[in-house]
Amino acid sequence: MRSLLYVPSSNARALAKARGLPADALILDLEDAVAPAEKARARDSAAAALAEGGFGRRMTILRVNALDTEWGRDDLAAANHADAVLLPKISGAKAVEAYARVIGDGPEIWAMAETPSGVLHAAEIAAVPRMRGLVIGTNDLAAELACRPGPGRAELQMALQSCVLAARASGVACIDGVYNAVRDEDGFRAECAQGLALGMDGKSLIHPSQIAAANEIFAPSATEVELARRQIDAFAEAERNGLGVAVLDGKIVEALHVRAAKRLLERVAKIQAQSV
Image (cartoon, rainbow, N blue to C red; front, side, top):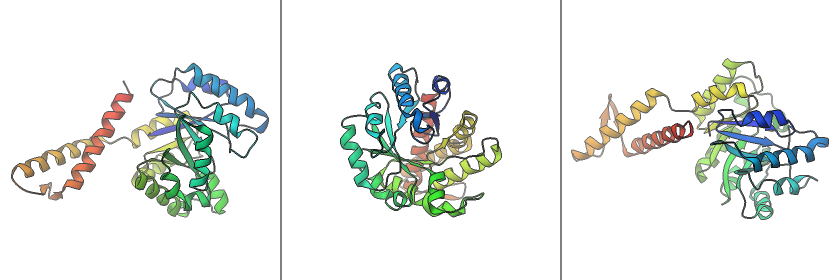
């Protein structure tokens, strides 16, 4: 889940092109990216594309319109062939449960964290049994907060960290918001690095040109992989000698470091499997 690309479902060319892009997931959008007059047509296009398949290893996520809109229920019915449904503007656990009752035994459920209420209730949202991921909607959130995020996003840090905490507490994915300046590669890379440092699993994207950088930054580096393997080996050697900790490069290595190292190597293995 390093890179999740929004694809406007009203754009047939974009839907077709998405099948060949190296994104880890595709968010087929029926909500913000589609004008009201195009909603029904976009739904039909997305449903046809999902039924046709051909997306390979890429996870397909259908972002639907809210359940209380005229399109919501029909959007959910069109999600049968998607891997997951992404719910917009979720305010709390009860809202997720209402969607879950309509979806039934269908795809995974993901939720947008894009309102003040959604962020304040992120922990209970993430804890709903059907929930598998939070996607932070930084544009909508900033608008509702009436804040003006600058470089470094200091104005959104509490919200971003709250979502990471909620996701980690329930073992679900947490995906950072979009970066709007498509041509600003340096700014995009810096924001990806910040999201990684905060604990995000990946980043949502608005343009295919952003995929490569997101995949690179949210994947463990060669240096990190080497260190993880050395930590595992050092701790194993310490245990063979009857010790509970190891020392590697002058730093303590405990069981918690080994668990983190093994998770990192598992992530590498999954990334490599996706690239085959």
